[in-house]
Length: 283
Image (cartoon, rainbow, N blue to C red; front, side, top):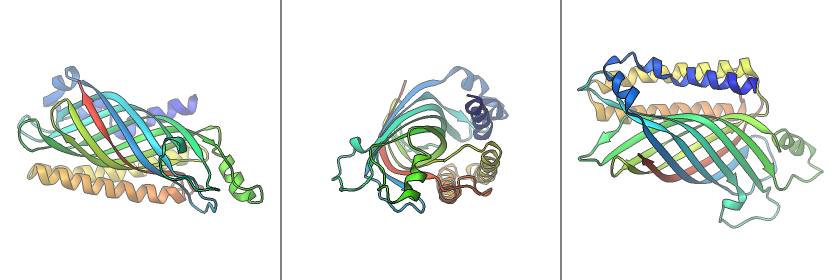
């Protein structure tokens, strides 16, 4: 429990608290009083990977729900650009049973339950009326319980021992996803994107904290660069924010897939790569 609380505190600090956002003071009253309950439901085609693992995982699919309060806030002045912010609680299942693709004999079947806390952000591009597109980036801290339905052959002790470090226990991890929300009205949107979720063998607080700080420093530098574009060309700024943030996260998560506490070393992470689609309802 202590580790979960420490991680949650770190997450709130790293991803930006409401108090930090209040330095753009003109929209404070709106932010405090107009929060919109939001539900996001997603389904994804997923592939499980573990660097250096010789056995093959069976195809799995993802079913996921996010619950939280979203808002569009003014980043600078009333006449300036808007930012979409959606902090949420996340719960989902990644399972062979959810996947309709043909099964292959000998592949390892699994089911993973996960929960976590995250934040989705982006700058909406208004296309007229209530129709808009939101290129978004989202990051989540997760706890995942892997339940293997089958294990590697007993002759392959290396693979079996590595997998048993994850099996039937909650493991800490993190995920990132990027994509597009297509908003037909203020209350309904469809979305599509790509997600990478990393699950770690063990939780090493100081190394993990250092890795997250390095990640957030990079995100902060991108934010400052993007804001200089947004002041001049809001649409271009939204697109550049989407491209730079997601390219950066992809690179960081690729490095962590081989060293879970990059740049401070660590074992390979268990990865879930998903192409997702779904819908969002805002009240």
